[in-house]
Image 1: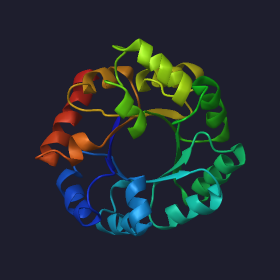
Image 2: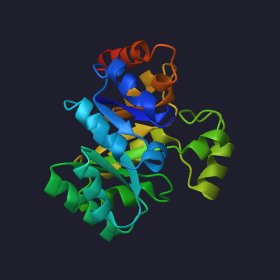
Image 3: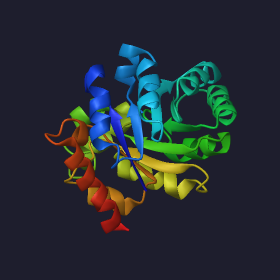
Image 4: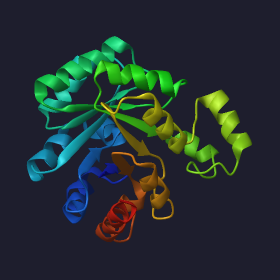
Length: 233
């Protein structure tokens, strides 16, 4: 089980200092899509140069030009690049081909996928390395707790209107409808309060953002979350 920190909210100039604090507790550092929009791929290159031992994910959220965009990300030092699960098969295939050439990996983000079970099988067959159950930021604003079914009526409404689903349910759909060639990952407001539930579900990668990045002591927060991995083993 791996811990991935998602850098979406810090200022670009703060990222290297933050990673310096937490790198011994995390396996993967993600340069989030908002920071890629702001800085291009320079931050990916800068972090690769500063932390050559760490896996770096470029959250490019590719929806077209899969081979070209993934290639550029790998050239800038990314180990993992994200493609959207709703992208055309040819786009995914292009990104996977780029990953194979670069020795990298593709993570498919299942945000907006209406039929998780079917698309997860298809994406696994297309060769992605990871399948990520993801509750988007917008959907999290509409649900009281994305890791619980306390408001099933709202959850059903969101599922029908926005394609929203509880990420643990999505994770179970991924696990039960794939062979394991593509490894499951999960993201969506994961924190100290729900980490045990997430660990018990058995994803390969757990993506955590604000619970680490916005913590008063990020290293302490990352270490605490990491400790739950061994407890749940």
